Image 1 (cartoon, helix red, strand yellow):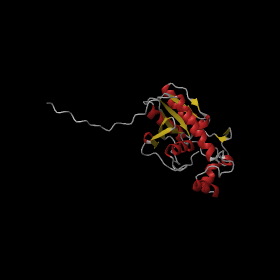
Image 2 (cartoon, rainbow, N blue to C red):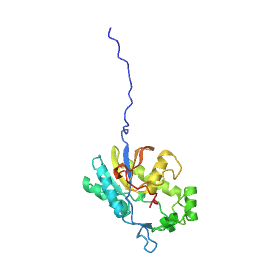
Image 3 (cartoon, rainbow, N blue to C red):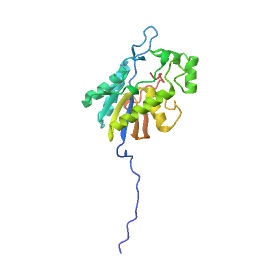
Image 4 (cartoon, rainbow, N blue to C red):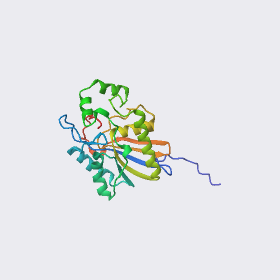
Length: 233
């Protein structure tokens, strides 16, 4: 008799389950510096700086990285730094970016317009309390943790429902990416704080199940990319 072949079960590469949606969460490129004498213009109560020259360079490198990937749709927020960061990729792919307003940055209340950066740099007591308590709403008029978490979660799940079996490039903000990964992992609110400009984070969403595939990938920005710890907005 011919001996029966032994069964074997190899390890396999990850594959999203049927109906899943992949979201590449891309933080916008570095935005213009904040200057006390010239506050940022404001859109719907939030500071709206454009990209700095470094940010445009990061946007081009990000487009080069993603141009060869399968991208089914591109999303941006209402704030122009995401629109400008997405522009090189949409031009390469021939796609028009959709706007998802609920993935705009956390609202910083009285510290909008660029003041947030100064307060963090000056180690203002409220900024230190914000870090210690991992809450945005210690800032006067700042968005509550509950409201921010709910709108980010709702927006991600809405995109997943609208795009089953697709991969989305979502150009968004550092606070939003941190919140999304915090939700996915059940971690502390600021566990993913400090996302780099131009970085790519990857999550897979299937209904209420969120899987983190990578966080803060900056390989496309090269070995000399500066991780300066700049404030998130």
